[in-house]
Image (cartoon, rainbow, N blue to C red; front, side, top):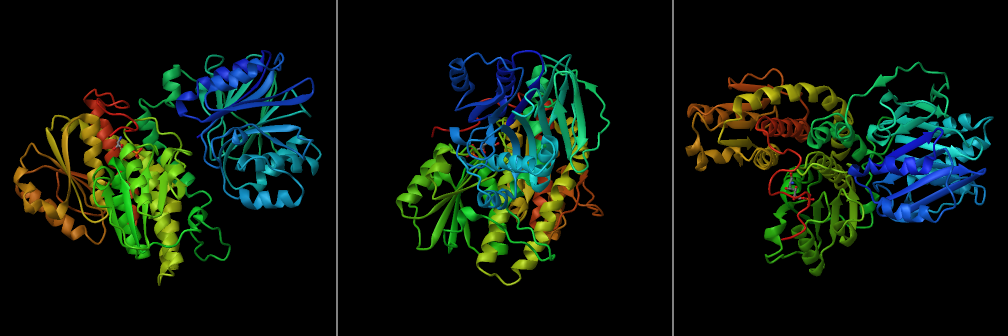
Length: 615
Ligand code: AGP
């Protein structure tokens, strides 16, 4: 998720924009840039790396006195994190670039649009989807009576998520901006106006904000702001709200912790991870799963998934889908164990290294070992250009945006989306019988999940808060699950351990009778995932075994199920293994509320690092 800021006012814009970008640094980024019109000429200055590199360049620019401009910190999703891909991007025919754009989001149909623009003679300098938007706006301007109409025309061609801001030589004191499925907020000052992806960017200057909605365009000057409909350019009535947050609270989007903010980002993360990866079809048949990064690689005879921690749990979950939907045998390895083992591979096998950070030492070492053995490795990462991403034979990105909280939440959700897509992708490449029906069903569920979670998360949090108050004094917890719910039980236990420092064990529910059930006591509660899948009857009997030994049970169940447990936690029903997308946030919220109830440092738990780059 990139940081964007636009300013139209009466102060020198560039230093104000750079300071605004500095207040967005917590989001993580790999390059930055500013754009402004001065003396009738468009200026774009950008640099790879930190803001200091951009400031170094700006120090050598003649007096940047423009009072209108835009600025951007880039979290790479398309294209390597290098200067040519940094924003702003300029639009227009070669030598006639008169506009600059910054963008947060993902344009799903950018390749099609780029092909049309190339055919029309536009030249490209970067691999980004944003530059496509820049030239599209220039093309729209050429076809329209005004810049505003050209801007709107261009955005109507784009599919996907965007929050954009644009400056143009044609109207040097104006900033245009628009949003579709990505946050964009208007700051209303006195003699100055702001637009940004996040309130911290302009909080020192004004607390009066207008929250923009999807399909709205903004036109800003120093003395005016107007909001128009993207499709009809009709003026929109908007209310101005006053924010009471301090800067820290604003950086967390008003949430108490980054972890809570990132749990609630998961509906958006699912949509962003799917963006551009599900083929659109008009005739109602199931589109294909699109993973062009893997098209040059063969379909593996067996997959070896290698990861650590939460990423390992995502791999265990993905194994179920890859075997069930694609018929590809999978083994899932803990990287720190695998790297010191024999690493025996048969011809045709491939490996997947799953890592949010792309820098986990054990996973990176395992990847290098696999490559030494001559086995191709796919990276499944969140951080573009990370070590694992660079050293893998191919990489697919989760596009989850920066994950600030040490405890991984939205990263696992996005890893699960990619693993589901991978299973569908291999099923179609292997022409598995019935694959199209499975794909149609899975795509329908995946498309519905953001709305399902958006609606369910607030109530889930309330239940988690209530349960945390009731169980915060527990000394130990079991987390139980069967089939695809077993990895989720492991993840639920890990979250409780690392956040609240309460001992917890994740177990395959059917394994309890082989010893662990001896531990059950009234003060040793069990958190069971018992959703209405084919293994529900088995999970139910395991829960009864626990109850027979007077162990209290919290059970995640679907509507209409009667289990007779102390704490039935009803969550929305989702078909098949994708039900994990509903169970996961429930367990994340439970651990979050337990840790918060116990006064723990939720975002920075003791002894933990966000990326374990040492053995
Ligand atoms: C998850 O909450 C933990 N912080 C940790 O287990 C993490 O998942 C693990 O270190 C792997 O990190 P990676 O995905 O960046 O490789």
